[in-house]
Length: 611
Image (cartoon, rainbow, N blue to C red; front, side, top):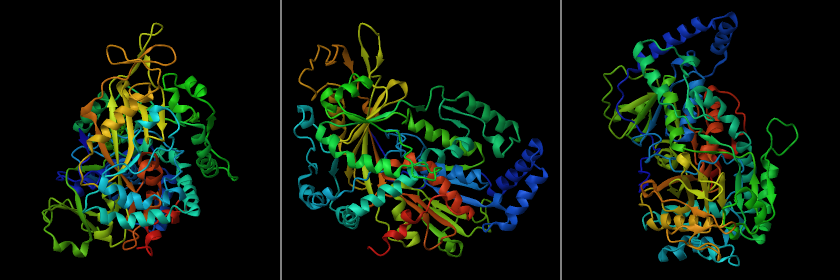
């Protein structure tokens, strides 16, 4: 079983072996050499440089400024690469021992590029259930919500709640401010505000990744990592060239992106009718940002019956989609989120960035306060003496910085509260995922065909099934409120397995399923044998979704140090999706530019007077 350590995305840093000043001199030398070799030292380039020096509100020497990004998830890595693309020296700190490893954030997520996900869980109907959520079922340690489709098939009755609580007595009181604000944001006007504000980000989600792909050298379609040193740097010695050649030889040879669409199943006609409100929010607020008139950019089709759904995914249990489904034909998903995280970190290092792992950030201070802690690097040339900030680590060391970005996911609140003195009502939604090995369907007409070709969501159960690399199938979801310290709940993994098998007519599925001698299931439609595959228990995973009570992320400036400490956290279920645009917005703020999206809805100040 795998689950995130409490340090994941908290900001991790091991020892620095590189000399910061030496790196800066080497970086500047390589940039000069690159401009010379590419002929970019033209008059126009010179004039741009001169202009930036006279108009910038940040620094006379942009390339020398040092940005520290705390958190090595998709939001943190994207932000680091966006900052690197504008010329910053970047150090990314991640508390997990390995970015993209099994203990890192986002490793086990569903991988869907969820540009349709602007419908918050907050709703007026949830308001009356909050007392039961907070108190009633806490003592019983049972699930919170009853099934929404009690009149469907027997498979529905076997479905566990998508939402549960596993908070300790110590954590429960800490949830009360978040829960109170969550209830406040269940008002109809608040739900519409959230949908509109998420829509503004989701409409730009894919374009926000373009600079990240370019800067990191990643070809997400083919699953390769190219040579991004040509963008800003030139290898200056044979060692660097050898490392780069080795990295290129280890490139992934299968796509990280699969564009087959996305299905949201509706178990009953009543469910389909109830989902119309969410569909209207998507059509209204996920619009083309380049159009002067509000024009929906989301291609979304209503499939009215299970027959239409089964034409796309013929091996699903018909009882799971009696109400049809919402189909997003242009949606896509990742085949290996962990591999992409590793690729982004590698691209950052290839571009001259530093990635430090294994130690957590514990404090952020202005330089005048740095003497209060032991500084083992004080006699080292690593630090920039002109920097105004210090990032202190739990190993007693610190890093000097000109700008700091807190993108530490579920662990951001402690840094914001302790170092910045701001109220931050962030709660952790614990999500679970399991993985099945090589699911397929065997028949007389085909020796082996994919069991599932696209990501499929069962909103009643609260999870998504996604085809993954190596023909594995991942089932990821559920929401468990319990903080970052409590261990995983083993029952959640078993619930996911039971429900996933019933999705394909297995245990708990339709009445017409027949189990053969090998424990496999007969497909309802054509008698073929459904082979869901063995659950790979070594890949059982639990991760943390950082969630604000209004389901909006925090993107903006700190109140204490608005020109040097920036926030980028609280993306709940859409951290991967919104990582690119979040990094773009942070880079715009760092440069002193007007953000391309109005950041007012995402400011932490929205909670300032609601403690």
